[in-house]
Image 1 (cartoon, rainbow, N blue to C red):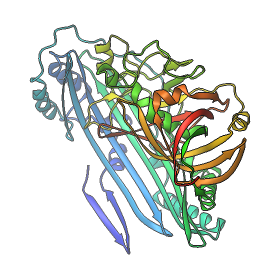
Image 2: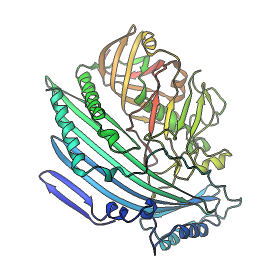
Image 3: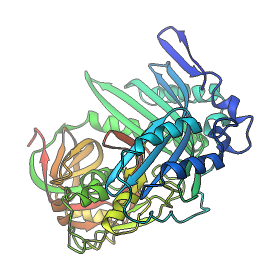
Image 4: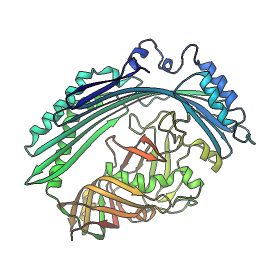
Length: 500
């Protein structure tokens, strides 16, 4: 992988890995050459050692990964950080009944895999026939090209500088601008004991713009980001980054005019798109298979029951072209697709990886995900969203007699067992008699997922996905994810605030 170097210029630091991806890729036409090397491991050898390691298991796989990542941080008018790194390794997992053995290493070789296989000897021998392999697919939801190599370093830095300058020129009240640009490229090969193998090449880019505006001694922040599984031109196009500037400034300017949020139980109108992060946290995690197999979710044992208002349909779909949370195959080799979780308010199913699906007697849904080769897979969301309804968003607003309109969220917390959640609003407005009034600050939404879903009284016809910025955390692992929803009217929800 090469040795790290560091170049310092004033307060800025630039670190990189020399002798990494660029030198290696020039020697191979097949990206899998980054995983297999003569004298270390070849595809036939991978199948052979995997078959030997998992011969007494119900299920499992050898997961090989090469990943290159880079990021640029531009702050206070200059480049503060520029990082580049590569890593590769394998994760070997064996499953027997409910027991899982897992070992990983950053050396891809037959010898290393054989050493890792010793861990699996601790598993009880499988008592059932091995689980069948995943279905095969030739579908590709994103390009295999490497975004990191297609745009010169200087152009990426120049873009960050241009965004910084343009944002400052937009409004004299802009006192600070932060720009981040990040990309990654991952090559994955999944090998099973039954001879099944599947490969995936995954690009990912993201642009984020943050501004601080100051007026009369008051300072407020605005943020906007975008990204997806495509090349850098998807965020470097002028119309895209100019919109990111405009949206960040608009949010900061709005917050400069904000007043203290009211407190109490009231009507809440949720905006479309990114507001789906509340759905993701308060409902989505509770619909993952492992929590429900163990009976620790607020939705456990409720298949076929009414768990939301009529008209509410929630799906997870990892097969949407170039979306941040999409995968051609999941990290177990299962093709992704649309999984209906809630349909017209009725709970239909859960998101499943192979382990939990087998133990619950259902089919895997393509939701087995892991952060990297160093982590075992688990049921995780991909792009989770509520489908649109038939209501006009303007009409929904007119029905709000006394409440708030929440347009964007920041951080939040959720208890999977109870479904209780707390979310902070980063952009919200007071609403009375169907009219949007002053923006408010310090608003939090407090409730529990199942109850909130039952209080939805209006579903807009404007369903939108987020702009491609989401990261989902679970059990110490983070993966990119997508969210979305239409405008929603909730009849009653507790709002936390300090105003009246």
